[in-house]
Length: 110
Ligand SMILES: [Cu+2]
Image (cartoon, rainbow, N blue to C red; front, top):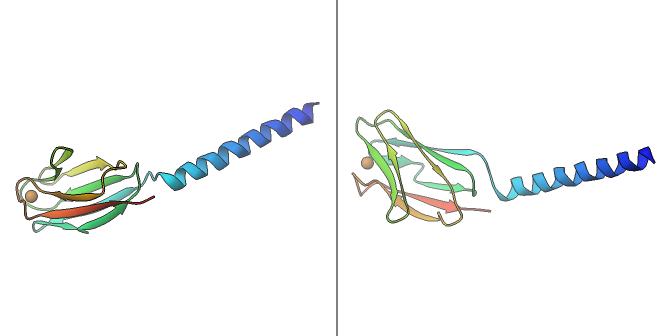
């Protein structure tokens, strides 16, 4: 009787562990680093999973942004970082509001 309960509990924990591993495979929780220097996003093109964070680090002596018109804008002030949590519809280009020639690209992967 007791061992039956133990087995069910063990089975349940195993099922939870498998489900957690699967959800990790679908959605990342890592950070993708992009350096902003000399008016350039490096790397210009990043691949990210839903739930990962893109972190821009500004090494220029002036402010930048990462902007998708009508969607989102991340301020990247001098000497600071800007963060964006990746969502399902983030595949596409972004640019800097102050220097529109600065462009980067995000590809959401699963
Ligand atoms: Cu800029």
